[in-house]
Structure formats: structure tokens, C-alpha cells
Length: 252
Length: 269
Ligand SMILES: Nc1ncnc2c1ncn2[C@@H]1O[C@H](COP(=O)(O)OP(=O)(O)OP(=O)(O)O)[C@@H](O)[C@H]1O
Ligand SMILES: [Mg+2]
Image (cartoon, rainbow over all chains, first blue to last red; front, side, top):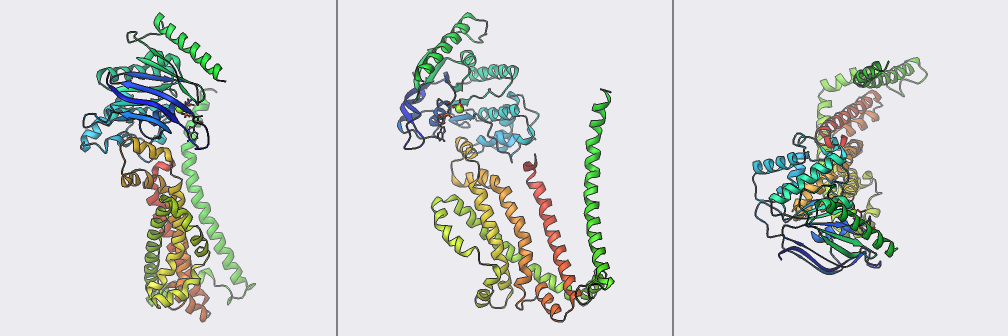
């Protein structure tokens, strides 16, 4: 199939003298696929996303990205960071326009696209505020809007919903799935919440061990929208949870 | 009871804030007046000789005389020129070099000892060099003023730029601002602005402090007039120019703060 990104046997380390935090990780995302990476805290999920979009140079291995072949008026990557990471000196609207400024769009198009993205996350009214005037969850949603506004070929999301309440989280999960379904974007999504993974993913990739590597992958073919009541959903959650526990206790 | 409490707490903060501001003003004014009154009393009581301290009540008359003779306007105008020029040169160079050093890692080590050697030299110690380089000219005065201003801005800017949040720079890279100047304009400068402006504000005061010294060696201005007057033991004239400097500083600082309040609104949220 047609890969949008593929990591081959990459290894990641920070200090040259210390052992790598990740070794021999291979991961690919097909065009249009929704891949969720799961693993415990500190295993290397955020680092993996940073490798994918070129913010972090792997020690070994290769990164191939064909995401650049996006349409004009869109960016290869949209990144939702684990923290909101907004520019405090910009109003919400201008924060969302950040990724549009280097695209070939005129001012009114930029404005329109940013507004649309803000409406998607339920913040259409707050464009004139500064980030300092928002709640923590609202800030996180502005970060999501900023990534959606660039209509990325590959959407990288690092625990984007973990600071939100259950109701808002569920709404945004549905929203995300419908955006994803209506475009040809691919998603690489990080979470430590197995239920969230089972709700969203085409494929779950389990990261564990020290140094971390891909210990298991699960292909999920259940129809969407999924429900926590479904037998398929429940069995996925049970299996992944049991595996995560066993891999994690093995590595200790 | 329960319904009363929220009501009273809802109305109070607004009132408190308004009257609190007025109170601060009144207290500040009261303090100043009390200080002047105590000074006046001390001077009149004869405890201290009138030749040693001027009386506050003499100052308006002396000021008026200076203005009528046109001296005050001339001195203030030329000091403002020295101040403006020195401030501009020191600020531009200080900010530019501070930015440069913070952005280019090897400069950090290269500059360390140069700075340690030059920094402790007081601006006044440069007077002989100023005279040799520029003569007894306005440029000399501006040069001396610019030295103190330069260092303050240099340290403030390099510190502020160095502590810009790296994670925001990552954001700008992911979202397509790959070119250095785009990053400078969109992340580094706005993020460093509050720290840089603290430096600028500090140097506004430092600049006025050196104006007087920079004019002591014959360049016309407030400093020169004060020297003249003190030679004649005209302490009331000296006091008039002390007050003048205080007012000019207060004015520059007030203008600065009101500009800052608009442009850096986001820092107070
Ligand atoms: N800049 C850094 N320097 C040194 N070590 C780092 C750095 N960034 C991350 N690490 C280490 O690399 C490992 C992986 O970090 P990473 O942030 O990728 O974890 P994570 O899986 O995203 O965790 P979490 O779920 O808590 O966000 C951790 O052990 C962390 O301490
Ligand atoms: Mg993380």
C-alpha cells in the first residue's frame, strides 16, 4: 500500500553517552489510515512523533515521508502537542492562523479557515481573546484548531484530549473521526488511554520496553461509530490492556 | 444569609479597586507634600542654615526667573538632545548586539571576558576618551550617556532572547516558519519583548542620571547649568534643575509605561 510515512529501524537517544530510549522501531502509516500509538508514560511516544515530523533526528534508521505531496494550501503535518503551546502574545484567531501564514493564501482565506477550525472545536466565539484568557481545556482545543486549519496530509496528535472532560472529549473524538473520514488525511495519534485507542484506531501500535520498541500491533476492523457497549470494542480493550501489563512487567 | 453573602462579595471588588487606585494616588501625593513641608520647616526653623539647603518655596520663583531669562528652555532642549541621542544609540546597539550574542552560540564564550573587562568601567571614566574622540561637542555627551544605556540593554536583551521558550520555536518550525527571519519576527522577538522592555525602562532612568555628568565638562545643558550655579553657591538654581530632571524622568517613564500597557497587554492576563 501507499505509505504516507515510514520509519525503519529507528533508534532515538538524547545524551550521546546514555543508552537510547528507543531502538529498532519500525512504523508506517498508510495513506488515509488512523494509527494510534499506545504505551506507558515515558516510553517514548512524544519522541516518536517528533521524529516523524523532523523535530528530532534519530540516532539510527531512516524516516521516509511522502506527506509533502499534499495539495497546495495545505501543510504536510499538523501537530497537536501534548501541551497547548500557544503564542501568548497572539490572539486565539492569530494563533490558529500560524500555520497558514507560509501558505499561498490571502488574508481573508486565512481568516476564514482559522474561524472554521475554531468552530469545529467549539471556540468560534473566542477568537479575539488571548490564550491567557482561556481555560486549560480551551487552550488545548485552540492547539487542535491550529493543527486542523492547515489541512494536513498527516495529523500528528500527542494526547490531544487528555486534559478534557469526558463529554467534551467524546464530542471531539467524534468530530475528529468525521473530519478524518471526509478528507484523505492520515492520523498518527498518541494516547495512554486504551479505550480511546480502541474507539478511534484502524490500527493500534503498542510501544513498550527499555529501550522501547513496537511490541505488538492490532488491526481493528470494527465499524464506526463504535460504542463502549460493543463486544468487539470490549474485547479489544481487554486484550490490549492485558498485553500492556504483561510487556511492561516483563521489562521491569 | 446565604443569599446575602454572594451579593455583597459581588459588588465589593469593583468599588475596592476604584477607591484603591485613588487611595494610592492620594497617599503618594500626601507623602510628597509631607516631605516638602518637613523640608520647608527645617529650612525656615534655622536649625540648618539657609545657605546649606534651599527652601521648597523658593523653587517656583527661581524656576520662573530661569524661564524668563530663556536659560531653562535652552538647557532642557540641549539636554533632551543629548539624552535622546545617547538613549537611541545605546539602545539600538545594546539590543542588536545582545540579540546577536544570544543567537550565535560561539559568541557567548567569545564575549565573556571582553564584557567582564569593559562592563565595570563607569561611564564617567570614558570622559577623557570622549573628549579626545569627539571634542567638547554634543556627540561627546551623547556617547557618555549611551554607554550606561548600552550595557543595560545588552544584558536585558541577551538574557531575554536566551530564555525564549524552545518549545515555541518548535511550534513555529512544524507550522512552516523555517526561515530564520520568520522565526525571529514571529517567535523570538515577541517572546523576548517583555524582558527587552524592562531593560529599556531601566535605561531611561540611567540615561537621565548620566546626562548631568556628561555635561559637567563644558557641554551646554542641565548639567553645565548646575555646575555653574553651584560655583556661585546658588543652591536654589541647582534645586530647580534637580526638580526638572525628576519631572523629565517621570514624564519619559509615564510615556513608556502607557505604551507598554497597550503593546504588552498579553503579559498581564
Ligand atoms: N530532551 C530530552 N532530554 C533527555 N531525555 C529526554 C528528553 N525528552 C525526553 N526524554 C526521555 O525520553 C523518554 C521518552 O520521552 P517521551 O516524552 O517521548 O515519553 P512519552 O511516552 O511521550 O511520555 P508521556 O506519556 O509521559 O508523555 C523519557 O524517558 C524521557 O525522560
Ligand atoms: Mg508524551
